[in-house]
Image (cartoon, rainbow, N blue to C red; front, side, top):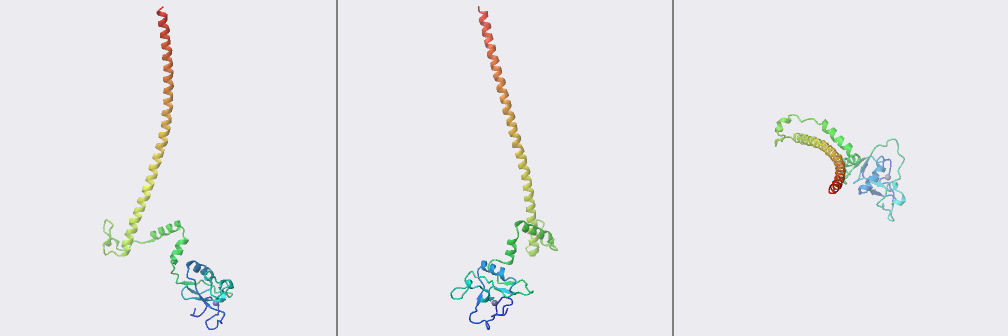
Length: 227
Ligand SMILES: [Zn+2]
């Protein structure tokens, strides 16, 4: 795209042939509008440079212009020349409004995908050559160790910590199971105890009744004897 040409592929408008009714418009500055433009322009420009590319009025419907024939803030190009077979993806430049290609790629990944991707990368990483020359036995790096060795040790330590954490979680779960089982046992034990207390109460009541009967009999007998 030469400066002074319309960015749209196949559009013949230039500064020299455009005529008074046609203007060149800059690209939007907001991330949201840039994303919307990109959806439409990604197969219709060779290079889209947000800072330098210009697009001519021919690609906008009348509703997108204000009274001064300036583009409204929410204007989106919708009119294009028929495309040939050469539809290829647009190279986008100057996308430095906080959303980098990396950010976009990351935002498309789920957390699980990201984690498995990180794990795979870690597995594929090779131990730096001569690692032992730069690392003390207690896994501390010598001051002159190359960045590779430092990162490697850091990752290995992290891996070790992760394993410890996983072990701890597993152990904790087991303890919890034992604790829950104990609680269930205690509950059923308490039920049994309550049951036997009831039994004892019954026995005591019976005995008390029997004692009362005996006392009565003794009274009767004593009364008979004293006659
Ligand atoms: Zn144009």
